[in-house]
Length: 267
Image (cartoon, rainbow, N blue to C red):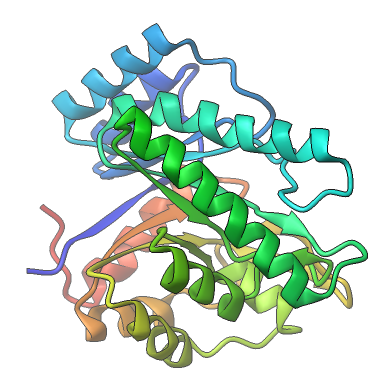
């Protein structure tokens, strides 16, 4: 039976712990813990958060800090970037089979292939550290919305195929990166090569320019959500869908109503 989990990016309450209870009361099933502007959660609190999520049956993923570039010309910045991802993983380990989402890199002066090989090398290195620590997490590099950033759909799929890491598919970023065009059927066709039984998505509407994404928007324009929901149901793939709109949990509830209208019944 297909399993779909919906929830907000960030807590809909004053704290992460309270947010888990709020997500449950709203009838949602997931939440992405945001370390976007820095990791301020202690390991002790992470353990409490994980226990509460388990009690409430809420799936938690993590968004690592934005300040990450795995191919910087400054080796110190690469080391610090990896440490931010690994610090996120250490906390996510308490959440149980959590995916740690991050924006991998910027091309800078590198060719796209050079950038890809460098990102791949750092992913393998971090996966070794994760394995050594027996952390129950998956790295999930995200499709990015700016042309200057590493993270097209093809690049992220190739990275996942060659390293066996997970991935995060941000539909708004794909839409912005492709100048306002998106083909959900093509996306799912491309992902098939990974043979994933479960996928992780970000969804919102988005404002963009010739350089790519500018800012996320509420779920009332483009890219359209209902055709995505229809395609996902058609493919019968399990999925977690995190709302990254300015009104995260409200738009998660909009998504839920659309799925229910299409005949999906949430547990």
